[in-house]
Length: 173
Image 1 (cartoon, rainbow, N blue to C red):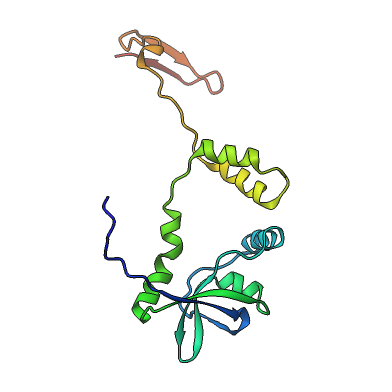
Image 2: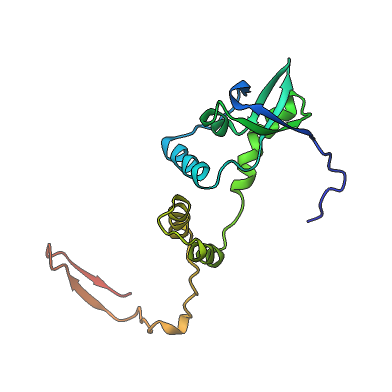
């Protein structure tokens, strides 16, 4: 699939802003259950803050487009923010699609298993999360060749009685 060569760079600058001064976008549709908060807390404790929040400026305020939970959990910290030049319609489009585009990614079970094996601490929160994801990934199953099945002759008449209720039926054609 060809890549659009006329892509506009929308990130205008990197700033450092106190998270509590960033206004949550009123149309943020994502919720953050306790399990996610615990996972982020474990990640922040073990790794630290990496990346940046995505914001737009409106009326002298920074409005959060992505990173609401991180900003909520670290209100007194000065965090990196990427300031974008989206108009209101583009900001809504960004909020609507940001996480959904990432969720369309596939999974490579063998690479996930290799990463899990290299994690070091099997009890770390990240290891436990990845192990849960590996368990949930579909397994690749080789198809069974039809010749592996025994022949079944539908023309043979058979009679059957259910051992539990005694119902009798006959099979065949």
